[in-house]
Length: 426
Image (cartoon, rainbow, N blue to C red):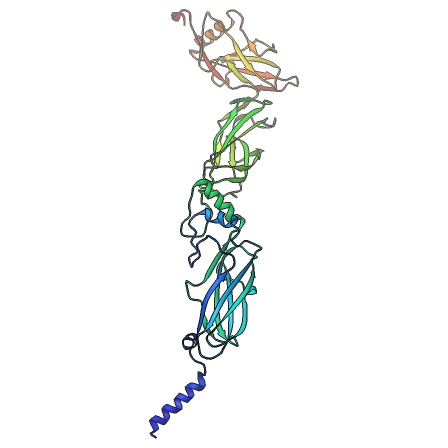
């Protein structure tokens, strides 16, 4: 025998020692997984893609008694055939996956002896304890479960679906809205996020007296495509000259807002007595802590009209009003904080020059009324005389208020004119 032939024989022996088992392909040729059968079937499509054509498939699956449900026992049966002329001893494994994750506690493994040209049927009870997409596969091992001899090929797996309460809710909603789902398991409807914005922020009166209640009306809208819950708003005020010093009026909350819904907040508020006189604004903010995901995040703030806060509010004459020299002269004002008044009329727009204005009533007299009708000839004579002396054609007026304690306050200044009866005399 040649050395080359001897070497080939030796190598073949080594190969047999290293690989004592036949290849899986040759062994599996003698074995066959005939089928996987489920005790509870369903009209849902059963295949590797688990395609659900419409949400009514979910509803039918819930109502159909033939479909498996949470808490049921699903019987799984498979059959393995031995096509060889000799007896085979094999390990049979049934694997269960839910949403692509194996349920190892539900795995079935058992050794069977299959006579030549015979078939063994295996039955496994599966208690359904989870919702989701179930996949059933079978694997055939050697008797010691060391080597896989055969397994279910793609397309021969069995599937079933257990709908969760959320799946049922979504399917019901989709049926109600007419939305269909094709090519995938049913998924939640996707809406545009909510979008909260103020329709308007209104405050009355625009000229408020100290001690007078402000009436606020604010309209909040959800112009997005989805509902929003636990909507927090913050209503504040600030002096226009001190915009960084904001004070909270209220923080109303709304539990739920549907798309397109408008919530109206009506409230009353009195600015504290220690606030400076001047101009104020109300600022409204929705979702001040930025906790709600919205379609637009930069439209959550709105401001009101400017409100003037004063101790004395001038009513008549209005700014730039013209009296007829021979007509009726009437001055009206309002105040909550003061009880005694007098008006001042002059040609100095700032009332800084004492010789450029006069008091009505004159001297140390004060009146309790909130209106004054000058005596006949009093106003036009004094005012027009002052105009001629100072060569001015514009008049100004204001009101001084006084409390019993002696505290005084001065109104804003308004302008008016007197039209001469005889233009040439002016």
